[in-house]
Image (cartoon, rainbow, N blue to C red; front, side, top):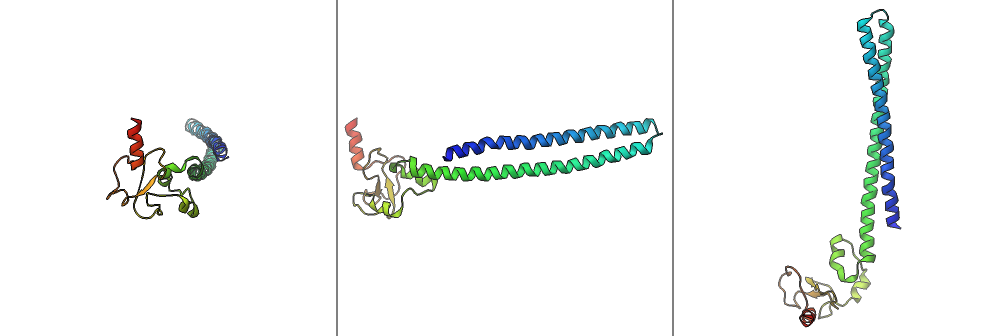
Length: 185
């Protein structure tokens, strides 16, 4: 459901942006038409002074139209900015929701380090108490290390219980997973 909603939202963004850009181009085209009219009238005034007042009024009218359309451009740009800001907020929210859903549903319990990297907790407090940790079977308190064995039954071990004084660099395997790896070779 989240993916479909996200895709629908993403499909709407280009349409909204295209509409705003089309309005900007139309307004710019009108401005250019008025600028051309002004240039023509100014050229006519330079060459023929008989209708100067009438031509100056037309130039003034064209300048007022340009001013009006420049205000329209500001409104369209403001609208475009608002649409983009809104879509960015929606996209950020969708990404956060997606991370949360992935961490809660798609990633198996074996990958607790991945869920931790996203900053999302997969289990509630009662589930945490039911999960066996370490050889000592105590809770997840104090410094711990995760076993990188794909089928490790415990996965998390207290540093003290496995003789570690500092977190290991690279992959680390518990005794059982080390033995399984040696037997498989």
